[in-house]
Length: 420
Image (tube, rainbow, N blue to C red):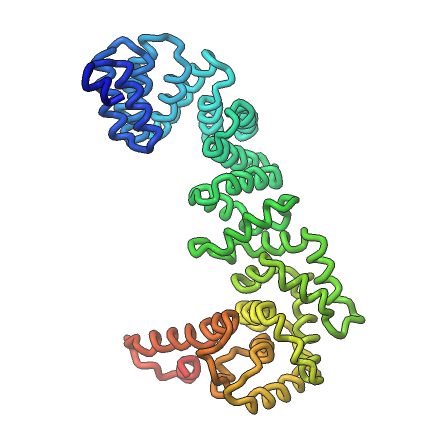
C-alpha cells in the first residue's frame, strides 16, 4: 500500500484504505491524516467523507465529524450510516433533540440500522419514554452483526438501564450482567451494574451472575457494601450452598460436618462476601452464628486438629464478624468456651494454632489477644489479612487520631473515655 502511494501519492482509494487500517489499529490521528488526503483526492465521494467523520469522532472531535457527515448526506441523500453516526456525534455534544432527528432520518433510510436504533433508544430514555426505548434497544440487539462483542455489550447495558426504569428489575439486571460478562474490563458498564445492585434482593438466575458479582466484590474501586444484599441473594440462589447453610441452622445440628465445611469453603463468592461486607440477611446470619458456635464448642472439647484444612473459611468468618461488629448472639456456653480456649492459646507460645486463633477472632478482635500471639511473620495468608484488619489498621487509625491537634481542650468525661 505504501509503495503504491509512493508511486501515486494522490490515489484516493489507496489513501482511504490506509485510513481504514489506521482506525482498525486504534490510531485515529493517522486515520484522519489519511482520510483528509483521500477527501482532497475524491471530494465528491460520500464514503470517504463518512470515513473522515468517523476518524474525527474516534479522535474526540465531534464538531469536525458532523461537518463531514453533513457533506456525505448532501452527496448521498438518505445515507443512513452518515445520519446515524451524526446522531452519535450530536449526542456526544449533548445536542439531544438534533441527535434524535438524525437517528430518525437514518431509520427512515434503513429501519434495522443498529447504531440508529441504539442511539434513538437512548434519546427516548432521556426523554422519559423507557418503554419505547426498550423496544428500540431490543431491536438494536437483534440487528447487531454476529461477533461484535463491544457493540453488543454497549447495547445490552443501555437495554438493561431502560428495563430497570420500566420496573423490569430482573430482566434489566440480566442484561447488565450479560454486558459486564462480555466486557469485564469496561469500567463504565461495571460501575453501572454495581450501582444498579444497591439494595437488590432478587438476582438473575444461572451461573453468570455469581461470577460477575464475584469480580465486582474483588475490585478496589467499588464499595462492597453496595453489593452486600445482592451477594446474599446470590448465595441463597445456589442450591447446594444454601442447603449447606440451612443444615447448620437446624436445631439438632451440634457439629458442622466435613462435607458442609467443604461446600462453604470452596465457594469463592461466599468467602469473598464474608471478607468484604456485612451480610444483611437473617437466614445467612443464623447459619453463620451456628457455624461459629459449633466450631468453638468442638475446639473446647478437644477437636481442633481437624480445623486446619478449613483455615481460610474460618478467617473469612472472622472478618465478617469484625465487619458486622460482632453482632451475632453468644450463649453462656460459648462464653465459657472462649475463656478456656483463650487460655489454651496463650500457652502455645511461638507455635500458635492458626485455625483456633482465627476462631477466637470470630468472637473478639485479635487486638485483644496480641500479647499472646507469636510468630506473625509465618502466618498463612488468611491470618495475615486478619492481622491487618484487626490489629495493624486500627493501630494506624489510632496513630493518626493521636497526631491530630485538638482545637479546644477535651475536658468532659465522655470524650476522654472515647479517646482512650
